Length: 184
Ligand SMILES: [Cu+2]
Image (cartoon, rainbow, N blue to C red; front, side, top):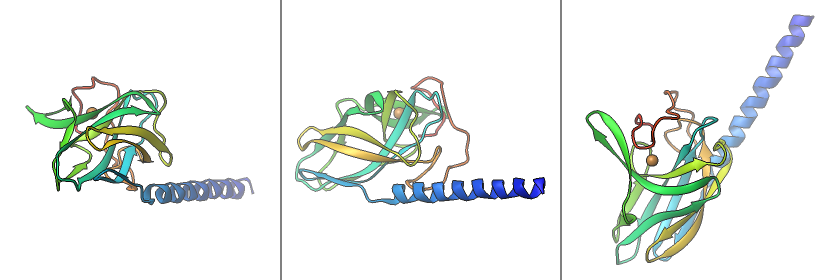
């Protein structure tokens, strides 16, 4: 009898977890799109962070439909003290991140994809962990097109794409900002 009840309870927990995951997937799959001047922003998303992590990353696809180049920088976010645009490059087998000086250029007619292991928005000095299923708001500034408030739905820790399940790889945490394993 005790055993049966234990199973029942476990089943209940499993179902609750499953519903939670489905709900989170739904939130992440929602279409978040923004326009500011000739700039179009599609599918912004961020990655959940483990407890104690100092930084998190955000991604999106940006298209410049205008006729002049523009430059993107991150002004502020509601979850971090500071945000920056970062590039990642491989140097001697180590993935290194660097802030983009003067903003990320998006040429006319160009689509730039911010994605893991590539260009990303870096949220520095997190005030709290980024929680899967929630969203993170950030203010982005285009030199010419102006500012836009963007909501980044948060995907699972280690996710490689919006709405995707966790990557299953080891997560980087702690460590120095400028020298990390290729997780972003
Ligand atoms: Cu970074």
